[in-house]
Length: 133
Image (cartoon, rainbow, N blue to C red; front, side, top):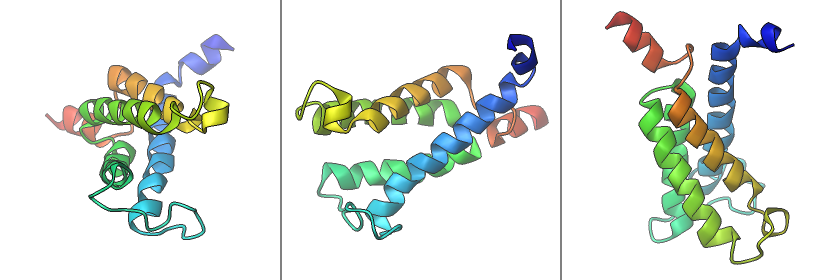
């Protein structure tokens, strides 16, 4: 199994980046664009709130992560944002992520930290620019 999957490591890294970016982007769209409007956080975007500022990171960072553009610094920044979100918004409710609803923040934090270290994978604008340069 290891050998069968190893040859797809780069492509799977790209898929992890794209899917994570897409899911992350939705956190920003719900706050700033009220899409999908059925979410409780819909329309909560405001530069005067931590959630609203985070929504800007989620919108812009999500798009950049999906495209694989400036991937390493953006992923590192988003990892930090999610660490702050976890300790600021979730951890005070409970130590346990399943209770404080911080599972997504923790997962995003460490997925983005991994992407910052591993890079964007071959299906990215960063890789395309590297090949042309």
